[in-house]
Image (cartoon, rainbow, N blue to C red; front, side):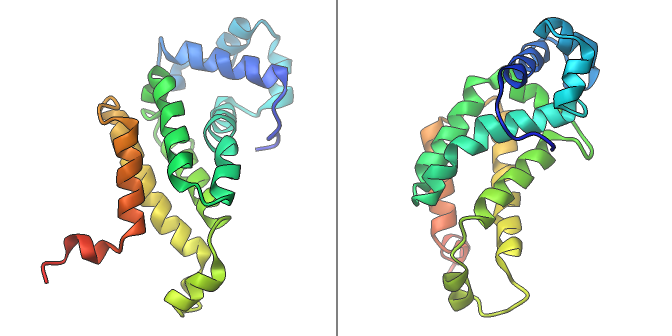
Length: 188
């Protein structure tokens, strides 16, 4: 993505895509529809984004992940998860459409990549090497493992119309990732 900053045009284009997505699938929305709704010309769109999938990634990064960086940096995992889930719930119609995208530009892949980056940038490498002293198991592998789990649970939550309350979802994330999984599933 070539532009991670927020400016008024980015915000207008994002709102335009989100509004259009409540009425039709994202893969059916054209750049012309986005720019018409935003009140800008097509070249303006391309000065900011390569395509609508890059715009979707911009929305995901700037609305779901950038705001929680300070929370994660301060060890406030539950608050970060609660914020992200609440933001998803607030734009429920949009994210129900977003999860329908498949392939390399899918929301699933974008979300997973964002979760991986958030986890990897907050892993205590020294503690990780004390717990698992294998050089091949680095912070990127651990981040990928947890991100895949978090992404799957989040996508399933969205697919099922976000019926589970945000507070319960955040609590589940915290408990599953805080406690060793073997304690949860072992029968000894």
